[in-house]
Amino acid sequence: HARGGAGVDLTKFGQYYRRMKRLLPGWRGLTQLFAVTVLPLTLLLLFIAFGGVNMHQQDMRTLVGERDERAVQSAAAALQSELHHRMATITSMAVLASEDISFKDIFATTNDLAKDFNGGIAFLNTDGHLIEKTDNDRFWGWVSQNPNLIKLASSSDLEPVFSDPILDPSSDQLFVIISAYSDSRDVIVAGAFSPEALASETLTPTYPAGSH
Image (cartoon, rainbow, N blue to C red; front, side, top):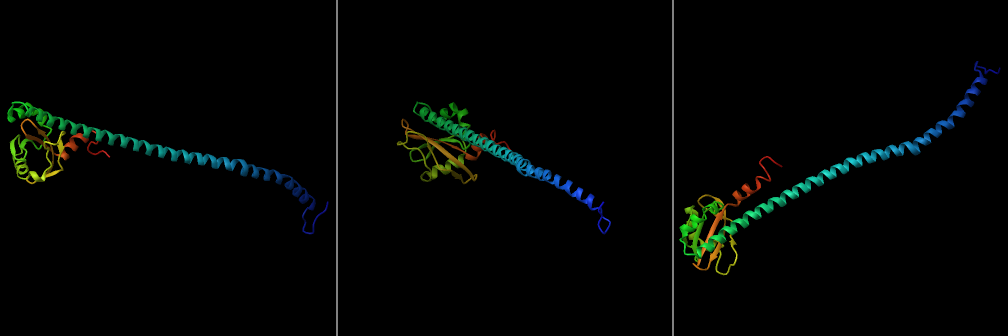
């Protein structure tokens, strides 16, 4: 047996070297298999997982957006319904004014409907001066003294008229007046309501206190 000068068995070393050389191609094959198949598959799975999370987040945002949109549409419809209801009340009172009924009797007949006008209801002449009212004396007294500052219905208006918001000097509360003209008596029937109170009463079921 051949030995090196340092006592190393060269024959065994050569056999070990040839055995490792035969094994190395196998390791290279495994490395290539990992690089070509396992690694791309792992990356694909990670991409699908993160993509699924992102899609879920987008779906949740879409659902929240659709829910909020439906809530806004519902609230707008509710407010519109309440405004139409108040218009109908004033129109009915204008029709009653065409009958031979006193203004006080008209108020008594429509007492339940008048509750929608927390600023009161009044009959005014075409100059805007007060004839009869339900309550809120100071506000209607101020309206009667400042008719030119307020948009009221006239003989040319076939539908009820909405005023701009009016600040009541005595209560510092905003009111909107809905008015309609009665041709038979040549008078204006007007009802005042608080937009803030209307919004609170109408929107609370949709947006309860503490909701987001």
